[in-house]
Image (cartoon, rainbow, N blue to C red; front, top):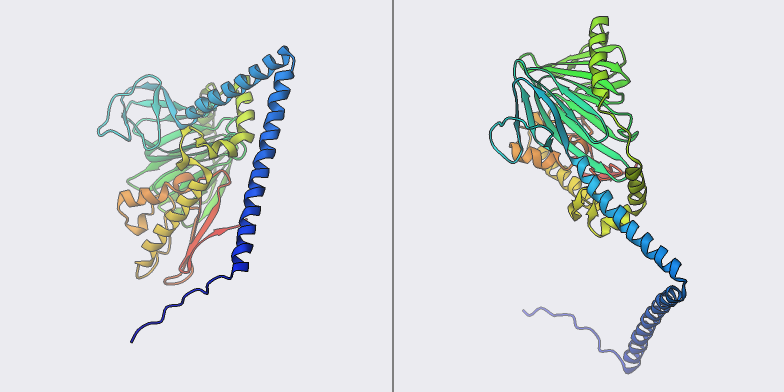
Length: 395
């Protein structure tokens, strides 16, 4: 039995003539548009040639200055993707993400994503950021730079992990109103809403402590969350939060003194920097088309690419959720510990999200769940995954 294939009906002479006329019309319109563009360009060329010499000089100088501002602004943006180890005392070691083993620190050593700093029993270290924010590591502390991200317009996204020990952090007034910073431990997240605070973690008891001396800090675990104001302290044992308490006067005095020392690193942006950012911000969409993203030449860092990566990260996460007999009651937004993923797979998923973490997780049945995470684009686009699929959420 032979299958009968469908053949298209031959066109008549009239239809062929009509198609030819339409194609000729399209070509004419394309040529007309190109001619108009050439005429406009020619008008500009003629106008420039007939302009006074002083105006020509002014235009050339302005264009050169504009290119110079853009180039220097892009160069300056690269500094936002690193922190600087400005001071250290006693036993201090650094492990770079691209190297194995711990090494001795160097003065003004640059720290980037996934770099680790460890202090010994008598060691301290101070890390400073381009906007003047600063973090001080106490003795017996292991600290990870999880994420340093930056968007044109002064929007920053920073995340750190205290694996053990304690850090005191001061967030500069020049950090950016819409910027976000989180100091994590393996069981809790301190989302910064203020300026001065301390986070400590004991890996033996899995207890996290938060002390706030200025502003406010959102303190949350996969189970619950609370807001700690200035003069308050919070704590969690595992994922369970304890009631917020008043910060003892002596502890508040010591912490305020440490914050005051860290504030000395704060400095306002220079006039040149403000001019360059004022130029780069409105030009950002055009520069991204050219691949000139903050920090260098990379289409992978453009907003559309970041949204695509977040979508893929959510899809990978959903695949792992679908393999479970029963979804977990809680899901650590920073470590995904309940999924028992391979470290490389966990990193592959989390690095696609803002803050390198989930926005939220909720179990609504034995195999029903809702996961939300934000892309690392400028708008921090929100995505949601459940048993039905992955979708973008409009806010």
